[in-house]
Image (cartoon, rainbow, N blue to C red):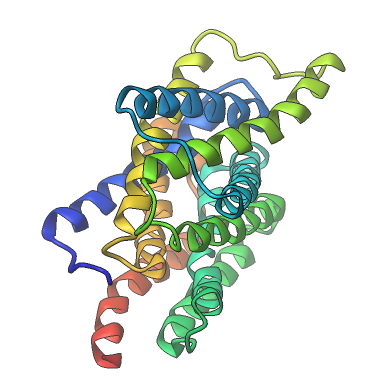
Length: 292
């Protein structure tokens, strides 16, 4: 049974969303390609978490069934990040984050199926609002359709691994879950990364400041933010957390315009669509109260 969320829990989830908003910016600031960013992020995060767990004398022993689920979820996480950083590279940070916001809609469909409960039509309605907002965005930014499509794919896999992790928060240490999943994601992306490196592809070796950006992604935006998000599943539903994460485009767009300047400035229709996303987050608590 979930405990009631405290004010600190609400502040934490919004702080984490701000950190998530920085991930696309950090990824876009590196000269490395999306595969390289994800691979080194996962490796650094996995090594750091294993060290923390070993130092705290936490047992790594889990059942074979749970292990197989976590390893598969690690693959989903790697696909989520590859599409996410890839979208920022081929279009803009703003378009990438707009597509990612569909994570709310995917969650409203997946979570009831996973828990074998009745679908909440209020949550589906909120998900549809997100789709409408994306339609507005796409209608005025058609030249960046690939980035939007990849962002939507990132939202799908983001919802998928979030729903799966939500089933283990009350029975396993969030750091242990993250360590196994980061290791699996690192192995998967590492195999492809090694092949690209041997073939002499561009962007497979981080340069200069890239190491610092990737290090921040691994330690701050993964070891802390990702693990803390899993911990918050104990007090919030997966849908509620992902709905707050819908604010990531808002924070990210503001930060991107401030950091990258004119490149990230979009048309007025894009901001109307983003405003609808904000409205969705604001309406959710009232609909949930009415439903209860």
